[in-house]
Length: 414
Image (tube, rainbow, N blue to C red; front, side):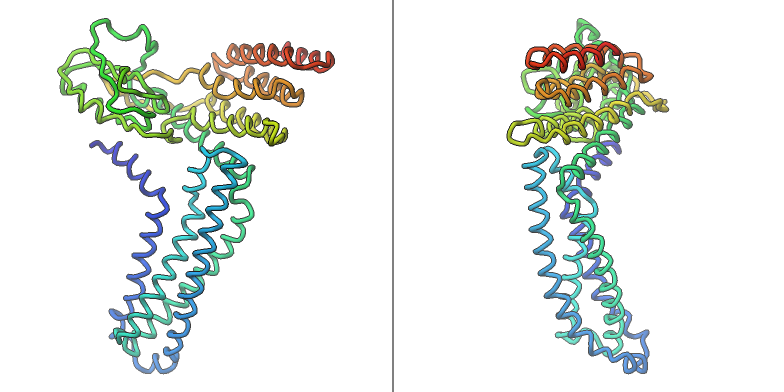
């Protein structure tokens, strides 16, 4: 397993809520026991001056209150997941679950509870002497201060957690980050495969996916090692975010021999898409938010208009100048992202679901006009295509000629 694969796996693990909670818990247990180790270095006069017996009551209060606060915070987090699912889209839940502030708060509360519990147990068994109680008392005061700061941050964070605007903001940030990462490595650090349909050598052997699901990650470094070892050329046929199944090729091999199992092991396939190597996923999630807002049950035109503006910022990141990664893995060919696919993910559903709403159509035509003027060779044609498509959809459902003329005037600028 290469370093790239290890880094990706490490990112997945560190984003889980149990990781931070476990880390804080271990730190809390170690902190609670440090008093027994440090007791020989504390003078008896200091322990008598401080009155360290007060730590028993403080730890008891801390243990009971932290258990209550943790239970309340967990229920609040579950409510935020439910709100995001019903008001935004279930695909955005993963970003709320990976929210660092929420994870730090819960980890702090659980760690503080364990700290006080271990301290009470150690005091009951006589692990601490009078000097050790002084150390425990001092650490307890620091823990209380840390809890107060965390509570203030948590109160501020609760006012935004699970809200539509906050959640769409997180999706936008994740999408822009993925877009900029891909701009720096447009072919994942490999050589370009311009045409998946006709760019594969005729004699190349095609290898099917080892499982059915979405490609979440490709270990291109491992593919490069396999290609170099066998003096072969490898042509990746499925990018992260695309569906792979056991009946279609996921990679093509020219030369060899290369073990099929080793090739399949370079692809991580799961039951859902990931934001990391898949810039299109963030765009699709934003589009889902707009489609849900345009449904008759929701009828939230403001959110749909807001999402169109966010999609413009996300796609504009693809047109930004970027310092491409100069490293290139020889022997591995990866297809680029197509601008047409990005525009389809962004605007097809919105143009369909908002065709009968002139406010949405107006904002969509203005967004496409903005994108058509950006410095990217493929943006203008993609914007014109979607402008014409949205205009045709609107003409079929809009009844007022003035609304149609307004959209036609905006489309004519593109």
